[in-house]
Length: 313
Image 1: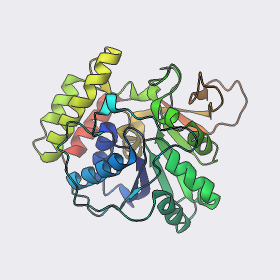
Image 2 (image 1 turned 30 degrees about the horizontal axis):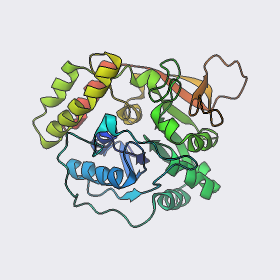
Image 3 (image 1 turned 120 degrees about the horizontal axis):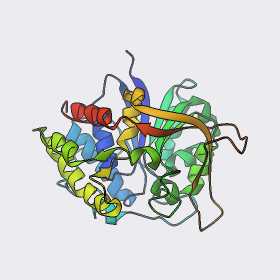
Image 4 (image 1 turned 135 degrees about the vertical axis):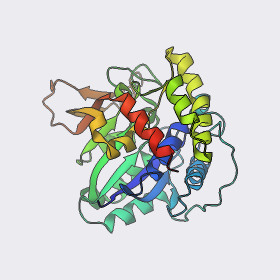
């Protein structure tokens, strides 16, 4: 089997961190051409460092890491330290990683990598605000045909928003970037809150990760234990939703998920509903579908996959 070429764009964040570990544990299936960091959960200086820390933890020193945009395209940056802690990955032992940051800007890497690829060759996996991806599309529109599909974490419909009544965090941080990406014309698979809120890190599932007696297992358990405390209190559930790893799980085992092909638009005009993903679930607008909206997950299968892969590192 030939590994699928992907570029991961992220803002670690504990859930991004677990996503990176899951991706790193699948070298036979995923050829990670590079990781690009964007400001989001915490500022850029922390997200790029956290991405390097996770690759170091996973033993994947072969993956180049690039720093991208430090703020959204139009609006001021919103961060989420109340969820992720001061470092973005509280629960992990922070140090300066040995893996260097590449000198090239993430947007330039995206453009150069895609322009040197065949059409429909590279899958993009954004799990933070979509600033880097949108800026690359704006800078060089000729990259669009090079994209195979975009498997992203962002948006909300039936669950409502987690940052405003109608907006999910990643889309709210840079709605203008999301507007560019969702309108780009390439296939999109969107992991919104409708599905990630069904992927709860319950005590039993967290304990199974904690039983992995390796540096990776202990680190993943500690980060998730810190991360869960916010959403358990917020939602009153037995465990917090694990958002970003759903993207990689979809690439590895798409049968774990159920999708519906719909049109998704992004609200960029109303302050009251800024960043809302307008999911036309029943086709009432007659707009052509642009997104495979993920609405259900085999949560037991997802955590089986996650735990088994983390144990490989």
